[in-house]
Structures are given as structure tokens and as C-alpha cells.
Image (cartoon, rainbow, N blue to C red):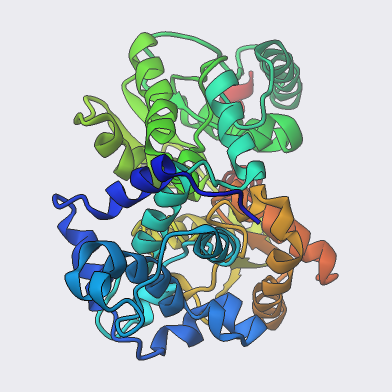
Length: 437
């Protein structure tokens, strides 16, 4: 239960709803006709079968407060127009619903008869809660770590550098080439590469896989030892000032190192937050190229910079489509081009692509341990999708998805292997002999 909401807190939250320059908010708050078509699109409702999980109910939570404070009908006749007070009860409901029961995947938008942008409204509701300091503590701790240390896992710079140096030595041994490297803080490189901090912490082989791809392509690239974090959980906690600071870290660092291209590592929301939302946060147009690593690998394949032998990946592979890269990012075909170039037997989930189900860990859900049971429960939908393909490998270009799929794999005993796109591609690389002489 929340503590008493002060008038100051309430005023900050209501200011978000009273922003007359935000015409999109007003339009979408008033557009929902409560037809319920969105219910069948939502993993939470399909799993729990309770009305409170219907996406339209989430819209109504925010719009009911809007009606109470922004319309004369709601102010005069609140019960008649379902206009609710912003108080402790409504805040508790909003926290559980908007943070604990929504991955902001956007599948409901695809199934909405009039295209109400439900995740946008959920995000506005989260902004209201953030203005009242009501973000779940576990999610806020992740953001605080990124603000205070430069990465969301709070990895000390010395520990990160040690990990990179160790991985570089391993790479040089594997390739039998002392010139192979994982380069840190090198200025004037073509590629400024970024990572999900879970890679140096738990999945260092993902780093070496992409380093191997860079090596095969003859790329000039670097990582920053301080600001390498592609994630931005400020996009999820609703605090735009914090989201802006995290985006600025990368923006300032690529300029410090004079990088030409910002290549966003395998993270769905991180790519969206930096590539599409970043210029809005920073109120500036980027003066450098920004692409995802999937697109970069696609460039390498098309140009012949890397050569792949798909028979080296001869197990059945299926693709999990990250919501922020496919449904909300337009990379459906590019992901398939890369995966089909690197694997001999690729099968699709049902449904897949823009209609695919979320892994269940998006929207900051993986960071909020208080909702773990609920998160893994809705994960059965993804588990059933994977099982139906009879695939042995699930590939996905998002470490957030990798984490959730790993837990689903364990919980539902799927017996699969989960790989990033870079790992799949690295396994299929054909490196010419002259490169390792």
C-alpha cells in the first residue's frame, strides 16, 4: 500500500495530464470505445482470465483520472462519468496494473479496432507514478545504478576492463592472431559499439562473438570503458529526466571518442530508447549514424565483408521477435535475412513477426522481482510457442529476451539453447586463412 499522497505529489502527476501541448495523449485517452478486442492480444489476460488485465482497463485507469480533473462533466458528476480521484487506492491499482501487468509490448495496438496506442498511455500513467515517487523500488534501483555508475548493473570500471582484457586474450588464442582485439576507449573509430551490462556480467561469450564478427569484417571499432550501456530503464520507469541523462551518457561519449557510427547492441528497448526516443529526450538531431547491430551484420553479409557457412549451424532454429525491434522497430525482415544467412534450418513460431507474443520480460518486468511469479506464469505462452516449433535453438537479438527465455527454458524444462544473433553468426563465420596468419 502507498503512503498518503501529498498535494504536491498529486499536482506533479496531474500536470502530466494537463499538458495541453500533448495532443496525442488527449486523443488516445478519449478514443478507446471499450470494445474488448484487445483482451485476446494480451498475455496477462490470456493467462489469468481476469478483467483487470484487459488492456482497455489500463487505458481506463488513466482516462478516469483525466475525466475527473480535466473535464467539467467528470468534476461535476464523477460517478456518472466514471471519473476517479487520484488517491492512494487508485495509485495502488495503477502500480499493480501499469508496472506489474504490462510489458508495453504493443501487441494490443495491433489488435485494437481504432489503433489506440495503449503502451503510450501506460507510459503516461507510469510518468504520473514516477512524479509521485511511486516507481517499484526494484525497477528504480536499476535506473539509479545506471545514473550513478554508468551501467544498470553497477559494474565497476576496473571489473569491466578486467573482463574485456580476459576476453581479448581468449579471442587472440582462438584466432591465433595477437592483432585480434576487443578495443577500449580508442578514438576516431568507425564503430562505437555498445553492450547490455549483462554481457560482461553473465554472458561474456556474447562480447567475444561480436568481436569475432568485427575481426572477420576488418572493422575499426571500440567500446567505452565507462559508458557502454545500451539499456535505458528510464524509458520504463517513467522518469524522463533520468531517461535523458542515460541517453546523454552515450551521446557525450561517442563525441568524446569521435566515433562515426553508434552501433546499438542486442537490446530491444535500449535500441528504441536511444535511436528513436533519444533525439526527443536530448532535443537534438544526432550528428552521427545510429543503427542496430543486426543491421550492421546485415551490411557485412551483403557487402561480402563476412562469409558465412550456414551448414555450421545445422540444428533447427526458431526466431523470437523482440517487441521493440520488430513490432515497434521495423526489423522483421532484416533479422530473418541475417538468421537465414547463418542457419540451415529456420522455422517460424505461430504467430511470429509483428504479431508475435512478447517474451514476458519486457517493460522493465525482469527488473521487478516482486512480479516474478506473474512474469513466469505468462511465459508459458512463449514456452508453448517454442515447443510447437520443435526447434533446438531459439535466437533473439535482445539480451532482455535472452534472460526471460532462459528462465522460461528452466521453468518449463524446454531443453533448448538460446543464442543472440551475434553468437549464431559467429558460429557460422568462415575466416580466411590469411586473416589468422
